[in-house]
Image (cartoon, rainbow, N blue to C red; front, side):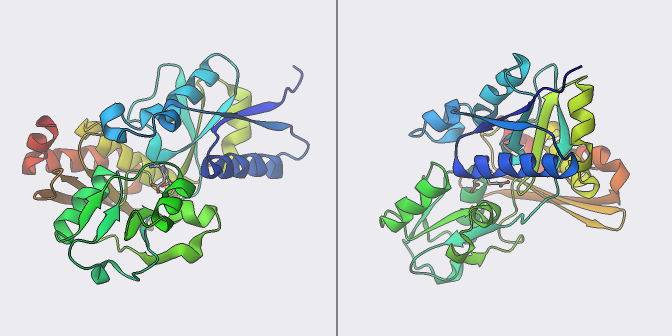
Length: 306
Ligand SMILES: NCc1[nH]cc(CCC(=O)O)c1CC(=O)O
């Protein structure tokens, strides 16, 4: 069979392009002489910029277009932030590769304040993430939360345009875009549990695409894979969609996996926390057990009312 060019479907945002180029570089590193091409596309999530994501059908909007490109053969690989991938994939597609995770924490960005503790009562803080809103409201109830959407550059521009006193972003996005100097505070996990999959890149392919699957094999990071399986399993068993604040954090200690989960109310008045510890090879079960514990402790009520 002639070796055709590997086509990578990606969004057009600078962060998405960075991630797609990272995968391209890794592929070329591991397979010298291989031909790889990016297919950048605009997704519904990029177009519908005015509505809060949770109201317009959620994060799936960022990945659907790329998945269609896989299914109709326009592309062989779709590169995503795992954070943006819904709990269930379409029939015929699989999350083949989980790349090594980078920084998982959220970051505070501001032109006036160095630390969340410095923000005075009434200060406006920008984020559209229900997860961030809930945890900010719970820990900093004196702050005013204001919706903030758009890609990383757009969000920073709105901050610089004085529409907010501070904003919260995933630190990893700023790092990848060479913008770490804008980070004032890496918000501790204990104050701001990350999103499921935050900081990790995932590669989706068609099932049974043996050539692509074997080419991608060296890009997979086993430890990250266990973490992501555990976090996504929790998310799947909560069946929360994106209308409810959900957060997760996993830590590996040798082959011990510690998985923390959070389900909250939109107003931050309720936050249900739980954690489980077990063998990393049981990642899927650990995620399910954690989900069951969260549901038992009251998460089912929060998930139902939304
Ligand atoms: N919500 C959009 C989104 N999807 C993935 C990232 C960053 C990369 C990652 O978290 O893996 C971001 C930006 C952000 O949350 O600031």
